[in-house]
Image (tube, rainbow, N blue to C red; front, side, top):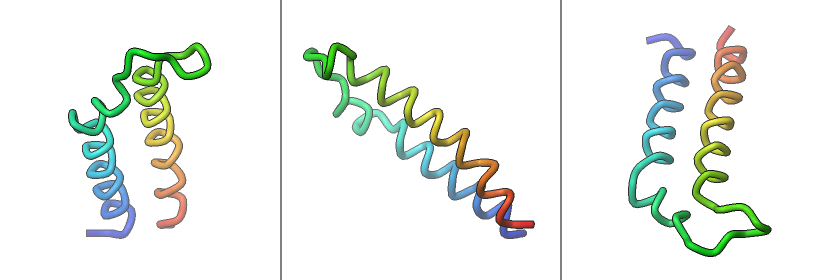
Length: 62
């Protein structure tokens, strides 16, 4: 397996852990932080981080 594939596999595992239900439930709180609910902020933040990390990890493997 080449280094790029290993890095993407690790990113996939990180994404599965980040979206794992017990971890997501930590951010499911009724009180908003600065007027924004934490759950959508967490979900979109993790999603954006995974998307931004994928090309960076592939660029390093070249």
